[in-house]
Length: 202
Image 1 (cartoon, helix red, strand yellow):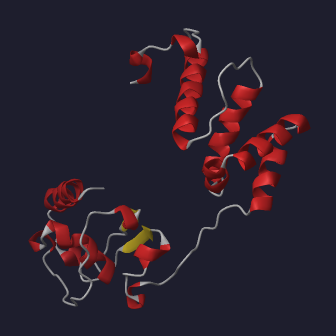
Image 2 (cartoon, one colour):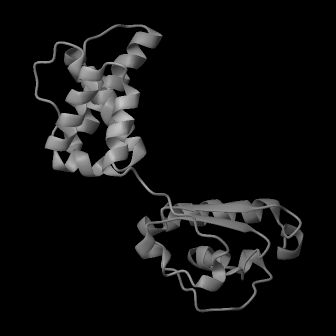
């Protein structure tokens, strides 16, 4: 979320409900900051002054003040981040750390074997992933392995003239086409992927 969007949402909510910090302590508030490492906020986590008037906070300072507990101290904060960015948060502001680990190489293979009852298909998919360094690395992420499975199953189980995806762009492009095709089949208007127009993709 950009600082502009956060500023608008946060300040609108506070001003709309016209609550003081004391009033808000009785509420059960949860703020989720998803992707701290991608945030454009400049977190200043060195100040330790309780803010009693939530409407007086400069909006770009709000995330840092929330994390430190200076603003709405009873609120719960859930932050997702890559490890490098997470270390900028002082340990005193952290109650619990959960590390999400991806698939190991053996777990990647196990996932594709279990995903497909057709043993030959799973072997071909595993072989293709191993041959593409970028796909093999990215399949560490379970949701990416799921996307890869959908795309390669689609391409390997029908008459496919083109090459199998070698890059992330190829994979995402084909995933989009698969989803558009499924949507058209589900809601009517059958159409081959080759016949997709720009309007279908927008």
